Image (tube, rainbow, N blue to C red; front, top):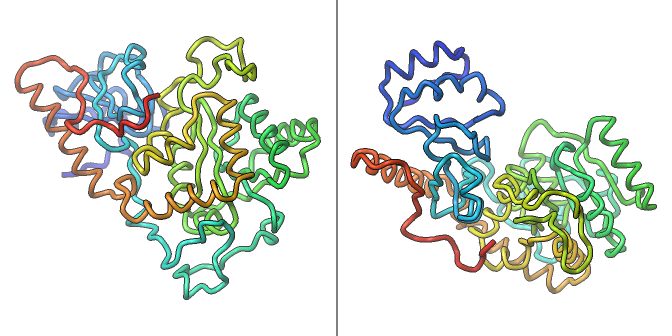
Length: 374
């Protein structure tokens, strides 16, 4: 049963929900996108159980929501006091993807050592032209770090960290998504101040996903996450493209015991948000080994992890091989697996309601991978 409420105003949506007598109402948008327009539906409590999920990754602070769908990596226990909702943990990453169904892996994956596919479209089952680094304005022999996050996610501390990575890995470049003129000018100025402007490149925005996957797979070597407001779909894109992704989960802006504090004047736990943990969640449920090497808890360690990817070919090949081997069967990219776990979680919520028990944190029978405790 499916109803599209996207074109309805709040009052019309309320009437439909009341008429349908729903048991569980899930709001995907929260305070983003269409969420504010539809929030009246939740505020009036027309369903006995209501929850947030997927798009708005954080607390609403509203008594209208009983649960937020999460997982133990994206929303660990110590964050619970910052949420008005109870955690409904899934045994897989809470962030669903449908890559396998809509963007199948090519017949031949790129080599673990990095570099492009052979220029043979039929052999590689890619129905569109394969770009070259020269066409993209990238150096042929450089190690290409990519971050296709929108410019609003790039805060000064993260960008300074990226510039330090370039300085410590002399053969590397940074490839960013095309940004609005003012943002691009600010990023170029910051890079120029560090004498690194020639190693920061901008890619044009592509309106469709498939060409973007192709250019990620063929032109980039590794991906860099943002912090506080981290990669979500962008992280899934990079991982599905076979790129090791370095991320920072936890309070990444806390003073570093090694003396490289990114922003020591910021309040404690400023950077420890569910929105910053999505990439860590994806990596953990793809491979605990990848999480161990690529999920960090400070910007200093994040910097070191990225530099090692660019400076240690054997280490890079090992992690890329692990990722490429896991992609075809990883539950992170299997929509059917996710649906089964999501349905089980909804049944657990409803069973508790039927027993007249108040909402409480609900955890899966099979806990998250034990290799990562953030």
